[in-house]
Image 1 (spheres, rainbow, N blue to C red):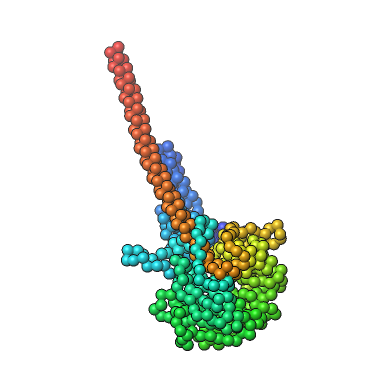
Image 2: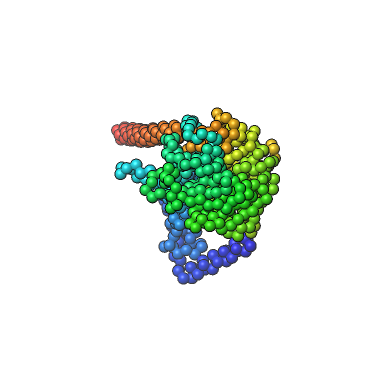
Length: 548
């Protein structure tokens, strides 16, 4: 096929050359003139004459010679360059932006930065208005770089804030990062709201009548699940800076309680239109948020421990198995039997929904990849065994998977090295390989100690990790100090680089002036030598005349 195409192109070239020759009479070039003048022409003129002869041979008219210029990648149309940049990952796109000013503009303003951001972290948290002198308008590239830079601070320094208020063990914590709020509850039957930045208690509810094992919230709704099988909810209060008024007396317009589960509720989740609840009655119920009606009941064969919804699917753990359901049809899409030795207590999912993390009674954490083409497939990618006790809770914020265990430790796992530098996660070319086998078990990047036993719940924000356990206190691991230190280091590096570039520029200028001075001195010496030679010849002529 390739040879046929090349042959066809040669035939077309011959036809076009004959047509051009027939349409435009070619002026004959006198070769004798060219040869006679060859010694007196410059190399550039000689190159032009060679191009002229070659153009005459292929049929290009004498007066329509092609310009003698070099084309580069940046000379392509902007739309074509934009399409090419669409296939690069963030690192490659950043390298391309350093090539030239035109590529910097195209690469920095490319729409793919928005896709990169949404793929990893979803919609950005609105920034705080700092006043009229500051601008909150940032490009998607700036938002991506800032968030990527912030995610690296979990390997830096930290401080621990300990929050006191609960009188018994804390069973659940939930971080609402967009509002910088933390919600906690446990055996004392009270839901508490904390300021994540200041570490202060904002409000607490009245006792709800039973142990609260699950809490979930967004900017419009707060729900808590009790061991008596009910879901208690608070609606947002307009004008309240903390969204929900937990201290107020029971108000049917602002609070609600629904009963349909026949066992303790162990897990809750929210999305824009639905509520999800899992229970020890071996079911997951899907609720409509507006009417509070149960839409679907997903029946398992064991106690439901955790659930994570995404789009039209929902992942769940029951007993030792992992399940994936279609929330529209209510059908079971995929199942992993005996994912852990013992119960699979915890579950987490990436923002794209393609990466699934499970933690179990055996102290291990598994990472799976979900692909949906004609059918849904779940493939194990990596395994970690960071704990000696049961993994009760998991949380994921790209690129960190965080786990809390009954051994009183928190592990931080960075998944970036398991992912290839590709813009999209795919089953074929995104993950480096199958990390199965005991010898290929990945170690965690960091372990946080200093707790007693039985950490029941953990969650992660942009620069904080929040956990609660049997001690009855809430601890916030604050990594903002590491962020400030890293920012200072980056500023110093930038100043050093700027000074280095300034010195290099001065050196180039000085070397340029030096070369010009040398050229002038060489020219002066040559002139002096010519003068001396001419003077010697004149003297010789004069002496010759005198002799004659």
